[in-house]
Length: 511
Image: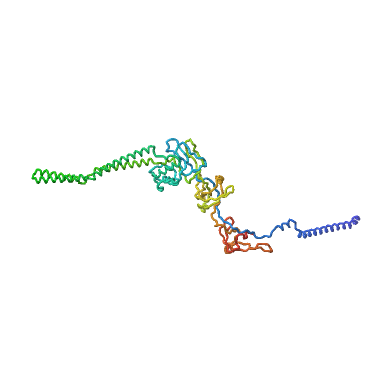
């Protein structure tokens, strides 16, 4: 018990010192924390200082008003091909033997023009003429129809006179024009039959003979109609006077028998003179003339027919009509020395065309004659002109779209004149086509669409930068009313009575 009592004060003093130490440490910690918080309010890191130095004070985002052409365009893709590919076939039904290709076989890439020889079959030419109507018969004198009119129009386009080019009758002038066509092509003109010339000669001889017969009959009629000659008339008068004198002498002599004979002689003289002076009867001669004239007419008709039969004809197998000449030869299946079967060759337009498509909505804005631009894969840009806008025909599967779907339209364009190098680079490619459907007439003032706002009354306006605040460096702006025009490509045409709205002036497009 003593030992406990003796040690108690010492333990109490040690515990109090520990408590004071803990309290002191707590106070120091609190003071350090408070000082750290206080100091941290005045300490800024280098990173924060740099960020504060870089960050500009928020302000208006501006863009300049420009001078430019504003266009609303339709953009699509198009294939570059040669126009209107067609197969050339030869009608060989009129040939006596096999249709052997004997010459004039063109090379791929060759150009066929009006009047040129596309092929030679069995020694005869296949001549190219402009036209849309296919050949369906041979043509010769006396025929008429749209194919004859097409032939005459084609001949006239070559500068060959076919006669009346507005008539659809094949006549002698048409045949003469064909003679010229074949002569220019370097071939003899064909005739309807090999003995046509002999028939013409025979018909000409028949006409000459009939004419001679008519001349003879007419001369006989003229002779019969002429009546008595002057000498015959005088002779008849003399016979009458002689009979009168004889009768007078018999009457003076008083011989009754002589008087009777004299009277009879006088009556006979009078009768003969009356017959001589009477109107001649020429019915037989007239009949002979009519018969001779009919014979001549028949001979002349036969000569006309023989001459028509001898005129130049156009066999169905010696002409091919192609629209939009000249044409380029794309492929040739005919070979010299072989028998022609099927199509001889495939040809297309000699000029490139762009074939694209458009929706019904876009097609309503497109018209032939409108200009366009197209861009090749190389980046080169060329001009073009729309030539046609037509409803696109469905493909073999009927796949122009499902029933009720919007129609597609085929758009054909003719490119500007191209160099041979450009043609080679473009053919067979697919290009981007841009067609302006609305455009300003030249350069106009154009502001970004984002710069336009609406006023309380619905009027258009722009927030124009008119200066800069010297103290803050901020832009000073003013709302200025404008009139908006065509809008396209993110720009809108603007006009204003305020002269400050000009090219180069800045307008607010955002903040």
